[in-house]
Length: 392
Image (cartoon, rainbow, N blue to C red):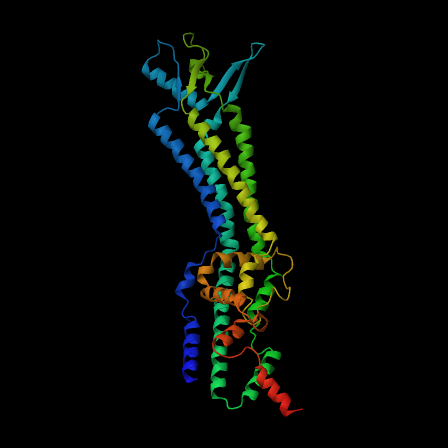
């Protein structure tokens, strides 16, 4: 019997988690994986396209090529290219013979509009960093620490029970005290459960998360409007008619009224426009999915930690409307499950609990570890019958 008790003590000692967790909690993930992916794509893609536009401009020289008269010198031709690029206005003649103008400024503003788009997509991330991350980090550190401590307390409780069982001479007294402790809820540590229940009445984190994703949808819609209204109008126009007869050159008769120019950067403009529409169209379902996750509870983590004493948010049906801070915290706990050392132990115990033949006697990790240590999770029947025989 002593050998079995020694083996049980070793088993319980190995089940205890290390207490020194400070350095491990420095790597908390304060962004969900999908949110991080959306951030990098929404911000990085415009910057990539902006670098492509600038690289094309620096490598090929002037973004336009004007067909000047043959009597123009090289310096005059360069002046025409520079003047037409600065103006970037297309002159066309209508049916009445009047000239109408159409600005082609989206070609010139392309790199800067991409930079503005990247900055706009960073604003929701900045809002989340300043409005939600400090409180979320504090909540996660406390909850992760308390979950592991609650698991350790349950293991130490089983160690204490095993010690009392070994040292006690009257088994009836031991089981009577154990039943009394269970009825009076001595084994429960409700601080964490009550803290999580209070988070259902808080909405600061969920408001910041909704605002972040709503702003992303708003800026994406604004991008669609910008591309549809400004880029689509000049999307297929490769050539335009430019007028340089302004200022001192207005009265020069040897200069033609209009000079035809070609946009050499049109292909880059088209690639940037089409790829922007495609990428942000793919991001919209991901953003909507992130929002819909707040409409349902992520109960997988809670179902595992139901084995802890006084952690019965599910069984007691304490979960109400999922749009609150508790649901956001649960999502981030799932993302930081690697920081929860107790999660792997409880997952194993849950799997073993589902396969045991005495499911009705096992509710918490205390009951299961008691059984593994060689004790019955409830009063043995022979002791119960013995008491009945003594007290007919």
